[in-house]
Length: 219
Image (cartoon, rainbow, N blue to C red; front, side, top):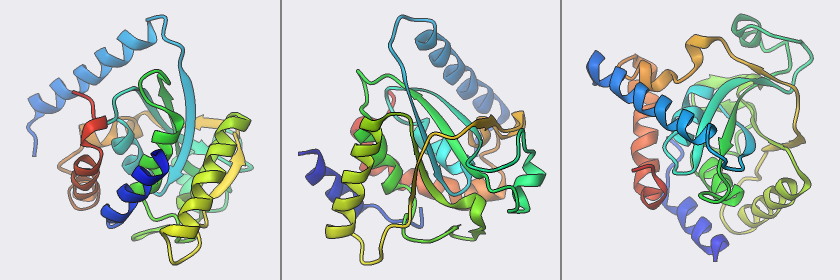
């Protein structure tokens, strides 16, 4: 059933995928309270790591989903320890911009996270998402368990066979050392929604995403 639903999602969603200061502050506080409440509970949490272009976009998408406790933007998959954003932007460190997604598997499954991942970016473009070009923007899944690996392989197989004309180029690799990005990258969209990149790239993507995943969004 999930496969049919997923294919339907992907066929519907496109890949092109102003609040005041008080609204931003309130939204940020709500997210913080929700994160602290779940993290401090006895919930058994899991981790997923995805890269799908700019991590501001990936973070904003996954923050919408019920069952996602926390999203952290960072760098992984490269050869430099503790890289800076400036180093990442050169494209020479080997790192990708990724997000670590802490989630409650009782509320959202890894397969559903994969659905969101593949529906919110173009996995068929190599080292590119829209105007963002470079290996740091590559599509990548860093699996944490063999079960995650198998689920990702199955969905990639189905999408290649039934949905995409061009082959999926998403890199599938075992979890790599993760380096948290600078603090100003965290919760970026919620704090900077009026910034031009947010307005022209992230907001339209979120609007499309919310229509398709409306039953999975946080209340």
